[in-house]
Length: 577
Ligand code: ATP
Ligand code: MG
Image (cartoon, rainbow, N blue to C red):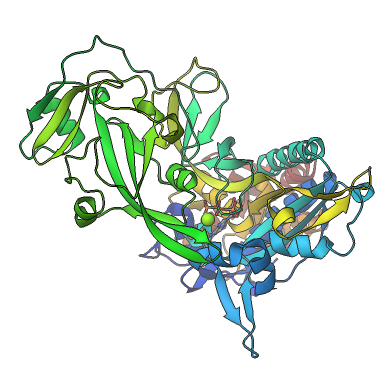
């Protein structure tokens, strides 16, 4: 490709509203252009990266015998009504009407469509297992679109859906997808970690996310210092142990205007791990099809833990939660904000006891009375615990014991979720009545898996992981160009001649080479070359007359002077060898 014929609109400065490096670089370097919030053009450079990621994905999916299809973006509401998600998915689902007033949505994920796709034909266990995939634009009306393609509203996703006659078959395909994903992110040159995850709006029994480790990632990962267990913070669990002390006499103590649990603990001179925090919530629940009721819940949790919203939503089977207001704490919970305790008089409140308070002795808790707490509360004597209300709704703390090996402790890092694999079970086949005949001729619902990769997010995550102040340091497998050929002075015949020669030779060898043939100052060309981020750069300057050029590397300061023949040979060997 000749630069003069290409389209790379680069800018000198980072855009003012860019929040993370990959977003700044993708916009400044002419990879993408914003057209509306969360909606982007892929410019030629960005498209080249996207296509390379797609190619790696296709190759790895095909290797695992997944079959490519392409489903429509516009999906009739009936399919989503059948699965029950038309209502449940909420505002992230972009709903549209056609000219006759019929409801459609722009697909955010395609479980319903794939179930419909196979419904007339896939009828026998003999046709199973089968795994379909597509690479397609999705639309999700994200509440907070941000970070460019990282959290866009319209974005490219590879989604795959597998159908099985039994769990063992699902396990095999799931394992195959795990391997394919490891290969995909590995081939993209990305340092990644697999974590166990919450299944969210997709549903199902278990899932794992592929995370690109990066400080700017939106997800928090807890990983074990000793074994290879890692989990999304929404999923991570631990075992909390409480030191058992001799039971002391219960007392009501004056804690004037002291509400925050840390303040209460220090005022009473006890450790925060000896306190019980009570947190009040309001939540929406679908009590009958498409009928939502506002409900209330209170969580008892050890003072040094926080309630995890996702875990609580799952436990309550809620559509959404929010903290109850002070007025609600008084009128619904019938207690006092800041001093909530055990014997709440509220009748319509769902109580949840986080397992962190099991075994706690001589605990401090609010007295349900302004400016008072209870000290030395002990289970059995001062309160009872109904086992059916015990749950794990806490956010694991750094340093907590790993629930997998019980030896190591959790550490924390941030990550970008680029892939997610799910064992769906029969969630969709049951609700949509998608069945096959098993070996005994019995009608069974399909057992399903689904597997997603954010294509644009993967490309952006690569920039996030590999960049400097001047631009991206692309892993060669997904770099928009592998080599840039750059004559210093386009008016010098000997430079142009060498550049032409190197360019056409590399091109003929199938190398992705960009020839900067523009009549621009060297500084401009070098800045643009940094933004394009090709791993190799051939600069043709003064020594062209001797047939000598300079080879440099985007990821380091090293430069070497080589003859034209040597440089061609080196690049062909490195890239194609
Ligand atoms: P997140 O928690 O980041 O919202 P998700 O759990 O909603 O992600 P999935 O439904 O599992 O995502 O979608 C599969 C993949 O699609 C994700 O792993 C991610 O790489 C990508 N993806 C999801 N939402 C977006 C988005 N708004 N913009 C770009 N890529 C996305
Ligand atoms: Mg999401």
